[in-house]
Amino acid sequence: MGRSLTGSRCRNCGNVAFPPARGCQSCGGSDQETLELGTCGTVWGFTVQRFAPKSPPYVVPEGGFVPFAVGYVELPEGVKVEAVLDCTDFARLDGAEVTLVATEPVPRFATDAALVSEGATS
Amino acid sequence: MSGDVSIIGAGLSKFGRQPGRTGRDLALEAIAAALADAGLAWPDVQVAFGGSDGSGLADTLVADLGLTGIPFTNVKNGCATGGSALMSAMNAIRSGAAEIALAVGFDKHPRGAFDPRPEDWGLPAAYGEAGLMVTTQFFGIKIARYLREHGISERTLALVAEKAYRNGSLNPNAWRREPISADEIAAADMVNDPLTRFMFCSPGEGGAAIVLASESVAAGNGRAVRVLGAATRTRRFGSFEVFSPSIQGSGRPSSVSSDAAAAAFAAAGVTPDEVDVAQLQDTESGAEIMHLAECGFCKDGEQEAMIAAGETEIGGRLPVNTDGGCIANGEPIGASGLRQVHEIVTQLRGEAGDRQVRRGHSADPRVGFTHVYGAPGISACTVLAV
Image (tube, rainbow over all chains, first blue to last red; front, side):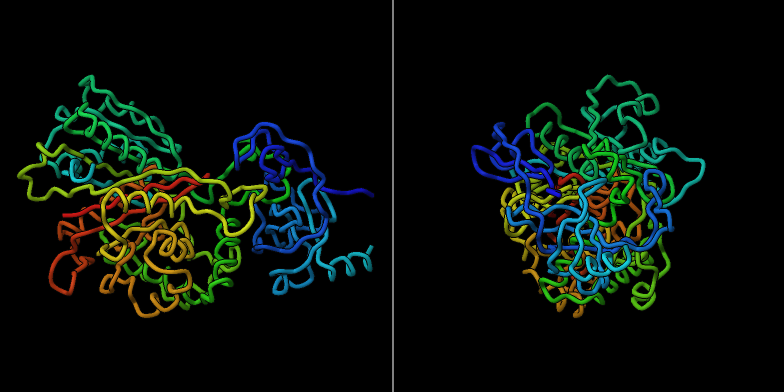
C-alpha cells in the first residue's frame, strides 16, 4: 500500500524531523528534503488514557470510549513519533516492536499481537 | 552579578477557589501584602513586571494601585511567567534603571483540566479529535519511562503526593489542607498510568508578588533575602515536551530544567549540596522526582532511597515543597513561580511557622532554591540566601 509517515531531513546536518520541518531544530538550517519514514519501530515510552478526553475536540469512537495506549515510537531514522498504540496487553508495551497501521488522523502503530487480533476480527 | 539585588517584600493572596473574586483581585491582594511586608507603598515602586496566563493584563492593575506613571511590562511566559517577571525586575535593578522593582503573577482558572487547542500548538485538529490534546498524557509517558529506566517504584509517586498534602495541612494559605495517605493516593482513579488523580495538581486560583531592591535600598534591612543567582531558559534541541508530535535527535532528551538550574547555580557560585530548602515544580508527583535529578540534587534513581528515608520531608536533609507545592496549592499558572519564591523567602527568614525548616534542628536555613518548569519547554530557577 506504500503507507508511511512523511518527515523531513535537514540537508545541512542530517537531522530527521516529523512532521516535515520548516527550519531544523538542531542546526537552524532552512534547507529540508522530504523523507518517507520507516514503518516499523519500538515503543520508547507510553501511557494509558484511562478516561474519555474532553469532547470536543475528542471524537468518541462509535462503540464508545475504551482506554487506549498513547506513546512514542522510535523509528530507524532516530526520530520518536507520537502515536496511538494498538495492543492486546498494556503491560507488554514497553520496548515492544510495532508496525505502522495508519497515518491519519494521527499516526497509529500496532504490536504483532494486535495485528493478529485485528486480522482475526476484520 | 551576585549579591546586588535583594528581595525586601513577598506577598501572596489566598490560594484555592474563591467565588466572586477575579484574578485581578488576587493580584491586588498579593501586591498589597508584598508592599506591606517591605514597608513600602505603591508610589515607592519604580518599575513593575507581571502577568497571568488567562486572567488579564498585569499593567491594568495600575487603575487600582495608583497612576504613578512607572513602566509596567506585561509578561506571558506560561508556567515561567512569574520567573520571567522576577528576572526582568532584577535586570532593571542591575541596569541601574530602578532601585525598587515589583514582580507579580496571578491567575484564576476554571474548574477541570486545561483546555488546549491544537491550532495554538501548531498541530493539526486531528490531534484533538484522536484524544491526544491531553496535558496529563505527557507527564504519564515521561515518568513511566523514568521509573522503568531508573528502578523507582510507583509507591514513591504516592509518597511524594502524601508529603505534599501533609505539608499543605501545615500551611494556612494552602488550598488542600487535608492529609491524604499514600495508600489512598495510590488507590485513587488512574488518570494516565502510572499517575492517579491525587498525584496531580489542579488548575487553581492565586496571586503572588515580590518586591526587589538594589543593594543600597536593601542595606540595613534585617529581613532582606539576597538573590544570589537566577536564570530562565527555553528548551534546547532534543527535548521532550507536552504536545510534541515527535522527539527529535537520538539518546536521552535534553532538559531545560537542568540548563536553567545549572545557570542559576553558576551565577550564584553555589552547589546543589549547599541548598537547605528547595521548591521544585510538582505539576504531578513524578515531576518532583525527576526535577530532583534534573536540578542537580541527586543522581537518577537515588530518589527512591532518598524519599523512602524522608530526606525531602520538612525535617529531612533537603526539604522540598514545604508549602505543599502545586499539588496542595493548586496551579494558578502565572502565580506559581512567585509563590515558590515567597515560600523560600519565608523559610529563610524563619517565619514559616509550623512548617519551618531547621538546619541541624536549630538554626534557620541559609540557602534556598526555586525551580519552575512548563510548556512548551521553559524553566526559571533562583538561588536565594540570607
